[in-house]
Image (tube, rainbow, N blue to C red; front, side, top):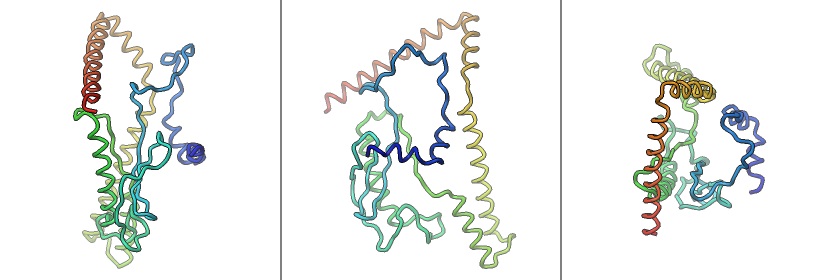
Amino acid sequence: TDLRGEAIGSSDEIRAAHNSFGRAEDAFLSDPSRAKRAATDDDDVFHFIAYVPHEGDGCVYELDGLQAGPIRVGSYRPEIGDENTTHDNNNNGDGGTTSSDMDWIRVARNAIQTRLASYSSTEIKFNLMAVVQDKRTYLTERLNALAAIGVEESDPNMLAVRSELHGEEEKRAGWASENERRRHNYLPFCVEYLRALAGSGRFEGLVEKARESAGEKRKRAEAWKKEVGQKG
């Protein structure tokens, strides 16, 4: 387990994707005189937790980097002879969902719901994502299969698949544009905006309003922690 981070970091593809979103520390945002501290229980520590099926024992495991190792959250019954429960190579035409997929997904879903239930009903600091096959791969294979049986380009089935493939390409073009905005350094704009607010005389009022809002949020958080502690 000590080499997990090194193993992931040795992947050129993962490292390049991760570093592409990295930003160098700015002098305006970092204080070299202050030592970095470790996170405490009062800090919000965000990280991803994965749920994956293991065909060898038919169980679903929780992979949490803050834990010592995988945690078994339940078992499922894989299909006999099924070699991959995360996607179906011989799909049924709807993108590749099989009954064994749903079996392990139900186990993972229950584990996720149990985890969410331990938080306040108003808590929204969660993101749920699924790691799936690139839909363009399935659509391209579908096009090739149609062409192999002699379906013409003007056929409605062929046109529908091509239209869906075009939509997927447009979606990724939009993602590329969003990623450029994520990488952009907005600090100079923010500095100038704060200067403009200070020059207009509105800065102090906005700061005081922000302090009041932060104080109310802190009180709600403390009340929720107290409520959870009493229930526990």
